[in-house]
Image 1 (tube, rainbow, N blue to C red):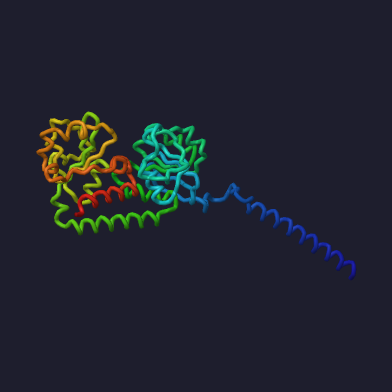
Image 2: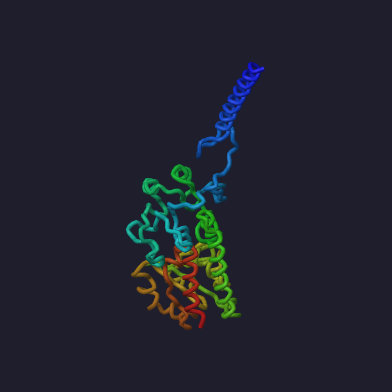
Length: 323
């Protein structure tokens, strides 16, 4: 009896040991080391990233990107408006600082070439975890950018500034903040229109850029032109084309007229200050005769492309027209 019990106990312990060994091996195979997926496990998005649909398709981006590089004005404007400071940004000109209307928010941001020609080596050196650009500007280098970091492209600059803001915000995890900013802006526009009343639909606005040797009339497909349209102001008949802009000379002064003229320039010695003011034809324009010719801030109106510039533009319109 004793001998049978001992063999039975031995056999039981042997079976138990083998079971524990096999269980340990199976558990080890089913649970890979942290950060290393099992070879036969289904692919799933990491909780540290999310998928964004942009102008190029879909791209997985970090849930909370820390080192962002932006390649256009709109992305820089929108990110700073959202309280996010990129580590690098392309600029209009390497020999000039970032736009002054952005204030000290650009402090510490490294330049990574120009918007037209981003410096890929400079971008890579910053070790970004997210890059923001524009399809119509940067499509040719998209694959190279993707080799550096996940890259999100808006379709085009300026015209759909609200859509661009939403995409930028989604990419950096600030979607709710963007919705609030758009809502706040639309509320300001509605209040302005309510104060203006019928004058909005009856006031033709002319939008001009004064260069050194000619004038560019900005039309409905420009950033500033879309802004005027957004506020509900009609354009003069001579400025009704669905185009970006058209060139005008002193001989075409009549095409520049409107009930109100807004103008800006990047040239200190521009045609407005050197020629137009003393031109007898300029004095015949109804906006000139009514005293409704206003110089506005160049960078927001020409190149801002984002939520910060849009609010500054609205500030200036309210200042000049809400009387």
